[in-house]
Amino acid sequence: MNTQNPIGVFDSGLGGLTVVKAIRNVLPNESIIYFGDTARVPYGNKSPELIKKYSLQITDFLLERGTKIIVAACNTATALALDTLQDKLEIPIIGVIKPGVDSALKLTQNNRIGVIGTISTISSGVYETELKINNPSVKVTSTPCPLFVPLAEEGWLNEPATKLIAEKYLEPINKANVDTLILGCTHYPLLTEVIQEIVSSKIKLVDSAQAMASETAELLMNYGLLNDQNNKGALKLFVSDLPARFEIVVSRFLGEKISNVEKIQLGQV
Ligand code: DGL
Image (cartoon, rainbow, N blue to C red; front, side, top):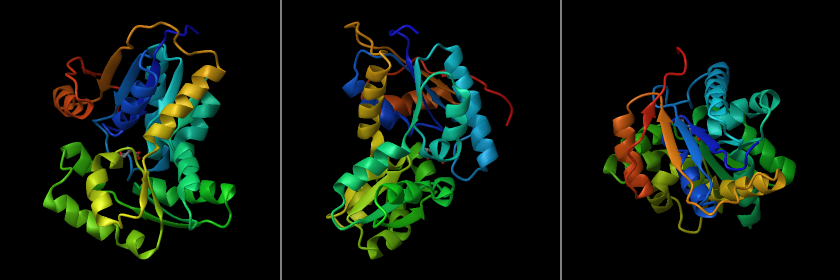
């Protein structure tokens, strides 16, 4: 494998770009190919079988493009499909859950951790399992926030409606006396402001993107795959629907003009 080959990153939509942003900060000379499955977002209320099928289609596409490692920047795909992907792929693939768990366990002081995510991620119980494997005395309060994904995709990051919805969703978190809250969906960091406003200011929010970027760097180093060229890495984006709309949202989010988003059809739903 050539060290100059790109890193593949995927999500159901634009949420995984929170991870792309962090990877580009830590590894500026790595090229990245991103796939956002905008035709089929959200994944969070779909069956495990469908999420596995979609994830396999995406990783096949990324492999065809010569990616040297794959970063599943989607908690739902990580929760439901990472084991299958790791069995099937011949290149390293990492998911977003473990870095979030590790960060939360380092941060908590009262051993009470909250987790918010999609319906599929929360009902898989994967965060609770991982947290308890690493610290059996930790108390976990998990709650799904399904409407956060369409709100983030829509760019409604600070609307009154978003605040009302967040208040309702975050009630159990506020009651549980947690001191750390894992944003267990890569779309949620887009709503950090509203979430922090509604939970106590003492609650530390864990956005796994930063930890994920460090883990990506470590993985590349361990496999001898770090790009040693000094050029700025390229970013190529693919989506399964509405590329023009994605360009607008992504340019706003990454703070740079993105104009080469391409539409790819991966198979029938
Ligand atoms: N951003 C993804 C996640 O982390 C998927 C959200 C969705 O498509 O429901 O879970």
